[in-house]
Image 1 (tube, rainbow, N blue to C red):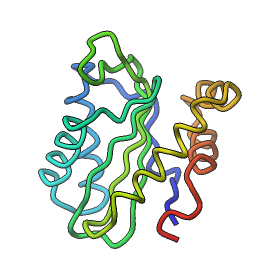
Image 2 (cartoon, rainbow, N blue to C red; image 1 turned 90 degrees about the vertical axis):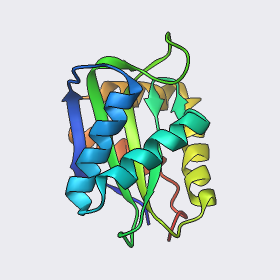
Image 3 (cartoon, rainbow, N blue to C red; image 1 turned 60 degrees about the vertical axis):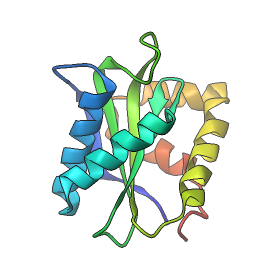
Length: 155
């Protein structure tokens, strides 16, 4: 089962450049360090995936990449001190990124299930308000994100 752990939550992160590429590089570096995998593989995967189609929904982005040397998926959550310009529209920004690092052999359907679940929650005003209220609360983010993750993914 896919699950977010508190040790993988980073709140109020500051970037020198508040843009998507800087955020994806930070995510790749952090995930590679935690997982002991190739940073370039993650960075390339994240950037290529976002170039195909943005993963932003409202003020949350859910990028993913595959890693050759992991057996289980890893979820990392980042909230940023300043909004990050995300995607092609210079007026669209996110302040929360939930990154998924998936084993190389996992299917795209698993990621699509996560996006579908997050999209469902993003249309619920109470869920959006709860996420917004928890942006600096690591435990709150863990609880909300784990509730939003589909229970059938990789079970």
